[in-house]
Structures are given as C-alpha cells and as structure tokens.
Image 1 (cartoon, rainbow, N blue to C red):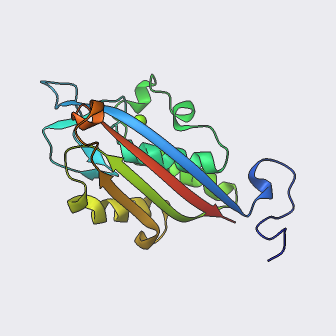
Image 2 (cartoon, rainbow, N blue to C red; image 1 turned 30 degrees about the vertical axis):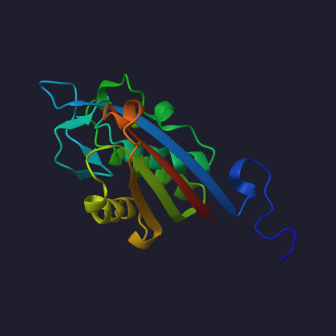
Length: 180
Ligand code: MG
C-alpha cells in the first residue's frame, strides 16, 4: 500500500478522503408515560418497545436514531441534527425520527459516500435491549439501504449510578464508517 492509498485528489471538505468516520451521541430524559408524565411511547431505532417510561423530547425522542443520524452527518462534515431540525419547530413535534435519518442518508449519498458499517451502543437500565436488537438492526439497515449485517447495536447498563443508571435517562453512542 502506498502512502496515498486511501486518499483521492480533492480540494476541499470531505472530497479528499476515500474513507470517513463519524461519531454521534445523544441523551434523552426518561419519564413516566404521558399523560401522568412527559414520556413519549418508547421507540428505539424505530422499534416500539413496551415500557412504563419513555423518552422526553420534541420529536419522537428516539435516542438511537438521533445518534445514528448525527454520526452520518458528522462523517461528511455536515450540520448536526439540531441545526437541521430545530427542536422549537412545530413541524417536528412528535416527528418520526426516521425522517431525520433519511435526510442524513440523502446527504451522505449526495456527497458520494456509502455506509460501510455502523456500530452503536444504547445505555439504559431498562428496558433490556437484547430482545429487540435484531429488529432494531434490521430497521436501521432498511432505512440506510444496507444489509443488516452492516449494522450492530448493543445494550449496556450504567451500573445503577447517575441519571442513566437510575432510569432517569437513556443515551446512545454511534460510530459509522463511510467509503466512496
Ligand atoms: Mg435527541
């Protein structure tokens, strides 16, 4: 492999690199489901999970979808999810976050890149992620337009400490690799 392998001629932005990596992170507060609390129905990676608490947010508050979206946008040096979709915009009230992900995928494609693979972690005490893992991976892969074997999602607890560990919040991390 030569020194220049992995790079192509380019003058600006992400045009110079053959490979791009992106990282996304998000956190949402968890609360008892509305109307008793502020929690929305628990949706993770677009998959509905029965749970007595749900994420609080302006959109559907899908923490994993938001982390994946920001990882994709970050990989192409784009604006982040909060810049593209203001959390004060009434149009996004209760919005299905698949809309955000699809916009990020569109921008990745327009930049000349495709997704090699994606690895994400969801951190929460409850509900358990593992029983829903395959459905979540399949749904994210479908939205991105890649095979489910290129999407990995795993669940972790926060060892019962801090807000996440006390069940008051849920967070997600995601890294994605793009190639052109
Ligand atoms: Mg969010």
